[in-house]
Every structure is written in C-alpha cells, then in structure tokens.
Length: 543
Image (cartoon, rainbow, N blue to C red; front, side, top):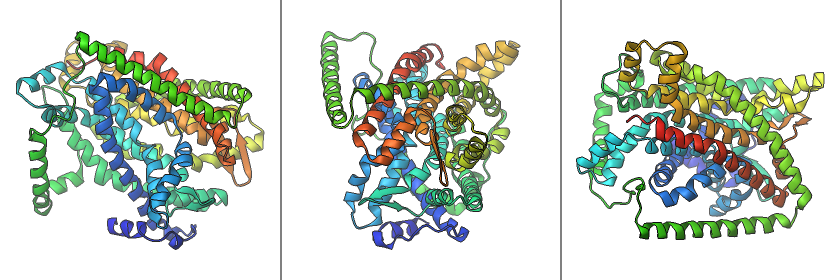
C-alpha cells in the first residue's frame, strides 16, 4: 500500500483522472485517503511533541505558543488552503506531490491542535512526587521526558489521536479539492468521491462511500488504535493493579509471533538506547520557579515587550491588507455575524457536555464496553457533515424551516466527540486505588460524581471543551452553508461569511473573517477556558 502511494505521488499532474462514482474505484480511493491521513498523523505527532513540550515547560514560550494554538485551531481548513496551496504546489509544480502535500497539510490542520492541547495538559498536571523522584534518580531532561513525561501523557494522547483521525475524515471533502492554476483539481480519494456524489445528488454513491468509510475505520481501529489503547493502559498512575484491562487480539497476535518479535528487536534496542542516552539538553528542564531572580524578571519583561511589539506589527500588516478591500461596514458586519456564531457555539457546547460527560464516564470505567463502543464512536466522529446535507436540506426546503436554527446541529456533529474522547481518556486514567477508596468510603450518587469523578476528569474535560469549541467555530464554515444539488442554504453567521468570501476569492474579506473568528476564539478561551484550566491545574492534580 505504501509503495503504491509513493508511486502515485511522483506521477505527473496530467496523469490524474477524473473522479468516477464507480464503486469499484472506492478501494483505491480509500487507500489514497488513508495514506494522506497517516502522513498527516505522523506530522501531527511530531508537532505535538515539540510544540506541547515547549509550551508546557517554557514560561516565555507559553506566552506566545498557547494563544497561537488558540488561533491556529480556529482558522478553518478552507482558510489554510486559500494561502498554502500556492506554496506547496510550487515545491513540485509538475508532479502530484505538490497537490498531495497541500492536501496533507490541510488534513494536518484538522488533526494537530487537540493532540497538542492534550500533551500540554498532561505535562502541566504531571504529579510532583513522580517528577521529584525522577530528579532524585539523576535523570537528564531528555531521559525524564521519555521515561516519565511522555508515558504519563500517552493515555490521553492516544484517545486524542483517535479523535484527530476522525477529525481528518470530517474535513476530507474540503482537503481533497485543490485549486491550482485557476482550476479545481480533485485528488483521488473518498472525499472527492463524496463531493461528486453530493453535486450529482447520487444517494446510492453516498451509501457506497459510507460503507467504504465504515470498513476503513474498522480496519485501522483493530490494527492501530485498539493495540495502542491496550499498550497505553500500562502507563496509568496507580498503586494497585486494575481488575479489568483492555484487550486487543492483534496485539496478542504480534506478541506471540516469533517473526514480529524478531523484526521488532533492532528498533526496540535503538529506541531504548536513544531514550536512555544523556544527549544534549535540548528540552527545557522544568516549569518556571515561583521565585525568580531580578535578572530573570528583567529578561521576562524584555520578552513580553518584544512579543507585544511583534503582535502589534503583525496586526498592523493584517489591518493594512484588509483595508485594501474592506471598510468599517464590513467590520461591523463580521462582528455581528461572529456574535451569532458565538451564541450557537456556547449553546452547543453546553448541550454536548450534558450528554457526553456522563456517557464518557460510563464507557471509561468499563474497558469491555469501551472495546465495543470505540469503533462506533470513531465512525460517528468521522462522519463528514456533508453526507448529512440531504437530511437537513430536504426538510428545510420542504417545510420552509428557519436555517439559523435547523442548520445549527451540523456545527457540533463533528466536534462534540472531542468532549467524549477526552472524558473517556480522563476516566481511564483515574487510578484504580482512588476508585476503590471511593467504594470503601461508600460514595454514591451525586456525592461520588462531585468528590471523585468530576475533579478527576476535570483537566481532560477542559481540554476536550477547548478543542470542541475551536472545532465548532471551524465547522461553522461547512455547517452554515449547505448545498445539495442546486439547493443552497445559508445561516446567518461568520462561517457562512468566510465560506462566501472564499468562493468569491475576496482575500481581504477572507482575512477579515478569519481574523475576527480568531479574535472571538482567543477572547472566549482567555475569559472562560484558561481560568478553568488554571483552576484544574492547581486543584485536581494526581499528586
């Protein structure tokens, strides 16, 4: 599969054929889409380890990286495609490689942010006693990262990787349509297949696409994520062994296979030597101390001044670019539309939390149930909103319903799962001894939720809510403008505004819409989520 993908990537652009709705082409399209997603997942994992570590360990880097992460996760996939396609296509103008890189980067932008948030949250809530023990053993920063910090973050990271894979499916329709040289190019893949089926109102083809997606999700769930969940269970912080553990038939097969074990020995040996090596101290050593020296405070002040001046400079460049094609009336319009979208996001996050927090806790406490529910949750999270367009458009047109209300659920369909997956990760990370102590003290009902569960999963829930909120803003691009054949419906909101401006190629107004959306997300996170994040970091650590 890998060899086939590489050979197709280095083919000339002229060799690309028109997308066909023949179901016999779906296996080939599925392979191409999965390879793009796995490539984007690898890039997202590397980004997460570097970005999350810097943000969690460096006070000065955190000032820049965390707000930037808020902005990056709120910029819609269409926004990236508008500006990055030229760069990536320019790297290999005559090969499919340039188009593939542009598509992979778009998928990366729908996968990386929640993984980085999860890793950042894990490093910030690392138990102090474990950190002190690793220092007492004389570990270097490099060794401490691989032998303590990374393993501690693995359970939450694995569940967020699952969510990222599903997030990639959610935007796969947009990411496989590349506009280059003033023409639309559809890369071979399930996303392009779905886009063509929607344009032709072909319900049978949509059914084939859903079946193909289901098979692909089941395959990579059993061969990739289920073994990862079982492997991650060994990193739970607890003093007594859990009575019930997750199981993977594929991992058991690999463990009992002499061939697989022999093949893994060289890689395992190299990784162990690398992780235990005392190499250059390239990782920041610790969280900032509460008491800082006078020189350190002066450096901090200079850094903050530099960040403020650089931010003002970037803002001035953006304002100048917007002023070339938009005026104050446009600014008032996008703020009004942004307020509408904000109201939708708040209502949907509250409803999603009320539904998925209890469900996530129930699943997280039962590994056997999680085994059955996991592929279903991945499938539902991966279900592209575009496939649901006929279910919304046909009743709205038939009964003349209000689009501002009835298109709203499309915004949360792909993002509510961030809350579910993070709550499951938080629940599975709860120490067994803590749950047994709660049983001994006979905590039941609301008292059990208030004293044991909610504090235990609080940091994970906040991570899920932040990424769900950012994802809902992002999804508004797809959900506030819905097409089914020749029917095209709009809801009043900032997502519809950006989508319309993107279709018109009006770059100053695209930047105005994206900048306004980013400002809404950053302000919302700074006023609500960050204070809650800091509260959870102080009060609910597993020390």
